[in-house]
Picture 1: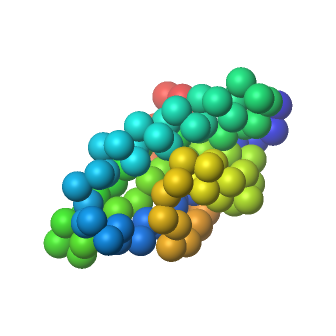
Picture 2: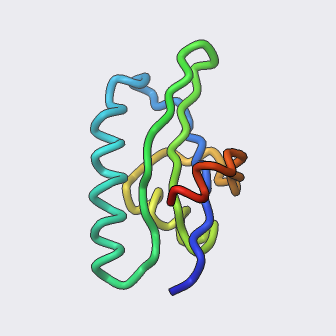
Length: 96
């Protein structure tokens, strides 16, 4: 099994605003579950909404940025960018 890396997917503000955020989160989760059944190593972890900045990020684990981008596209998320995310909490690494 390949090592999974964490990635953030920054979403573009939808024309309807963030009202559909829960549905987008559900689509992201369902899509990665489907992709795992198909043999892809990708996992949706959580969504992070920052209302003060009008920004939303989805946190994924995957084998590559391309795999994560494919999952976000398949979930019909308006992707602004995909970046590798580093975990800075060493105690959490040991607990995993």
